[in-house]
Length: 359
Image (cartoon, rainbow, N blue to C red):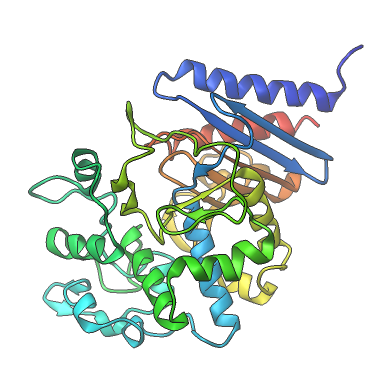
């Protein structure tokens, strides 16, 4: 019996994922979920692991942190324009926002941290003029545990502020570490407890938790999928704790689907609040960044790319991704579990969308 168009498309996506992993020797596993109520599809694929394996979400966690901040806003506990000095101690902030000899600490608002316009240095990706990057330190000292304050202090000691708040864009995990601490100050309890109480539990994200800090509501039958930095398997490294409120979560594609659907359907926060999260700053040509959200406008990137593929969501340094594509009413979620796959995974997603466009 001949395959239907839908079955043929599913087969092509499966082959595409397998080929992607086979042709790149740095890849060891990959997971992909394609869900569309418009087309009536719920395709799950995996290579090297099962389709339901948990995995490190990396910077997808920024969307969840931002949604948590949005919930606090709706509860009247916080405002996006609040100065961060209202919630954080001076000793923590000293030296973080000094540019050209002027201290801009009192000018930094929560929104500046959310859309990376505060000017703060990025402890995660930047390398100091002298010494090793924090990623190199994490590889050299796998048993070292990093707290949020440790990473912030490292940024203070080794890096410089890029511009005054609101006068540019610089992607910085450091800002999200501060946001996590702000949540703790407001709620009076550990960050992970607020994540579970405000987001994971209400949405039924039973396999999602904060690595090193909490446990999932329901234990997965599978271990966390191995994640790599080049050829180094860092899955069991305590030093992976350098990622906290900026993306230190473990989840599944199904749980992340629950989250992004709730966000888009205004089941988690109100539409007006979600619209506030779309306070876009220019990340790069054709890419804008809001409050934990990335918006891709492919037609603006290159004239041969179609605006039909425009998508909104977020992705991470390990090639993790969670996007909604309005044209096809489709969610695409997954990971390649390899550091440095930020750009490569986007090209892969465009190929998936090309297959979907034939349905």
